[in-house]
Length: 421
Image 1 (cartoon, rainbow, N blue to C red):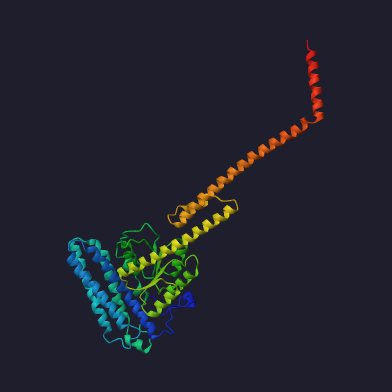
Image 2: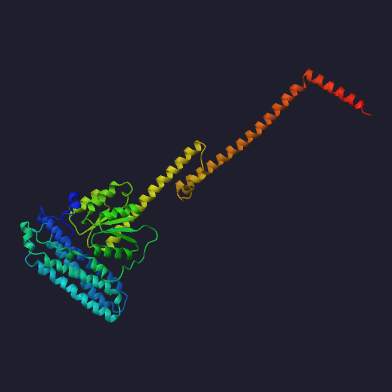
């Protein structure tokens, strides 16, 4: 179970769940968080089922009852938020009854829709319908275990939920049916969902899958940090209240790491108080969404974050390419330039790419001119050597001594010719 007052490092290390020092405001936040979690599942799955049955046989019948389930879930959410608001002075004597009536209606409508779906042959919606029913049962169990709400006003601890009351693994794993995973993007890295509640992870992954995003999931901050260090993610959707390492600490460590700080983070939490929102934004979060989230708003916020990341990535790539061109200029000056070093920059279609292509062409022309000059110098040296040799020969042959030797050679040659028979 999540704690309202997030544990410090010592408490996390010891796994302490001590309630000492908790204020009524803390306990209200904790209770509100526990009750909102199953309502997130009820609303999320019912919205997806409404989309699924919209075009099928008997859509009007199924949509009507599914709409009642969604409305009941949203009504309960409003009631929980109002009745358990931290500034409330009194919780109301009939709060337990007020909470139980709508959730029992949800369970009843689930049974009705199940029968209708089976009669219509739309059995593919049964797994998600079962998840709604199990989440409603979970909410009902929570209302049974909260004890005397009035004790909160005296600063006493009203409840301690056993682990099985908050275990959500069965809701996802036993209700059959994997996420539909529709529309996985091919133009980016996955989005990482970090939440200790398996139902929350499943609902969010399903919604994102329908919007065309690939996703991965982590159960806590420690696992999330290991994952973002091992592979690339376009964005992180981070819960605030988690065991082992909460969202605040996870966000702090990410923003302190130069390799991770540019990953956009959207906080998603049942904590809806303004202090939590401000704290996350000040720590570097891009945005903050309360649970249960609105799918349209979620799409808009994720789209805005990814567009901002795309522009940032383009800026980083641009600056990196400018560095390549600068290094190429230094290489030209040192006579070590290789045009291949800026091929990637030259392939750009913008002004920087044009500059790189001009620079590349000019560098090649300079290189070619240097080669021609070297060849000309080489030929000139050969000519100079030949002329120097000729001059040296002429200087020798034009001396009196050489002329005298030449005459003697000619005389000896004539005598030799005369002596021949």
